[in-house]
Image (tube, rainbow, N blue to C red; front, side, top):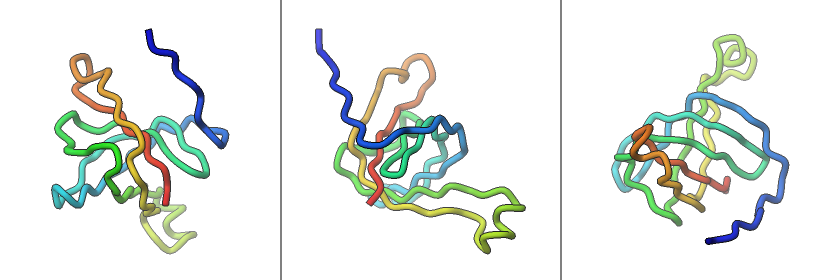
Length: 104
């Protein structure tokens, strides 16, 4: 049995929000959802067909509500990040993979 060691450096906040992940190698977006986020990273679930591996750099697009977009002047918050973990636990039950992404 493998022991997991907590490696998070910042407190995470549960946040279920739509997110689009741009994968340059595929030259397209994959739509998913965040499950938690911190100052330094995010965990998202995306379709199992998303061609990502640990070490890939991706771009995350977090859409904003209309009110927030009017206040901030943009309809999305865009962040670049590096995939630091790929979880394939839910492939058979939910047809998705989980990505731990560290913001750059």
